[in-house]
Image (cartoon, rainbow, N blue to C red; front, side, top):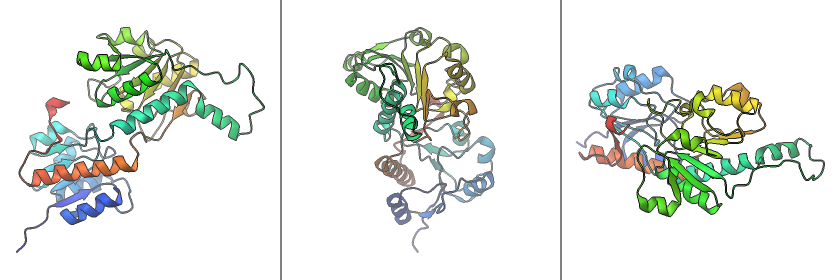
Amino acid sequence: MAARKPKVVVTRKLPDPVEARMGELFEVQLNLDDHAFSRAELALAVAEADVLVPTITDHIDAALLQQAGPNLKLIANFGAGVDNIDVAAANARGVTVTNTPGVLTEDTADMTIALIMASARRVVEGANLVQAGGFKGWAPTWMLGKRLKGARLGIIGMGRIGEAVARRARVFGMEVHYHNRRRVSPRIEEELGATYWESLDQMLARTDILTLHCPHTPATYHLMSARRLHMLPRHAIIVNTARGEVIDEASMADMLADGALGGAGLDVFEHEPSINPKLLKLPNVVLLPHMSSATVEGRIEMGGKVMINIQTFLDGHKPPDRVIPSML
């Protein structure tokens, strides 16, 4: 008798090639209508699955894991971040957690630069004005933005994405400055022309454009607090393609509305999909629906990583993208 295929429960719809291949490898339960799982559906999934494939919209906390069945041994997250999963609680129950790092580096870096350009040069504001019939002709002092060449770019988090953003920023002639938990190697600093700041506060005071590329952890929650936001120059622009929770969104919205900040380009939000109502009304803010990683190629590569992690684990080996609490 053939061995039973492991049951893999996928919480959201994935690209067709990924779902087709999963169906060949595993007994897979797909989410055909792509609805967000309720708490009850997640509880049923962890109770029945051998492998759970959640996404960042699924909150797998300790209470939910207490409802897990004896067969659940792997949570293969479809995403690079794992702040939606209580990794320590999973580890304590003998459940391995994996993610999909590295796949979305270039896509996220591209969108970061797009948000920098859109915010500095008022692209969305100008496009909206034209579509509303407000373009009455050119004028020397109308719709003035900020030049990127020579601007000081402050990067919080010099990992894969931070480095990719720095490489792109150099092409535009920007000065690259960064703050990171650990200083990168001299070789990388030289390659990127990057200046390291051990003190985040000191870097902020000298930053024209700030972009965030750190994960959301207890240590980074509201890393950009109201106090730190006020350290930025009044003309500074904030760009965030990381996680919304790393910024005090309410304080940032107040400062943008009061002219205490120059602008913002945001792809993530503290309480998404809810967005601070003030942000929705400001002309100096570019808002995107968490789409920095949204490319066909990226999503298929993410699915490939998920399947490799699952198959490697089922073969009795350590998955290549295992996440352990000490990494967070």
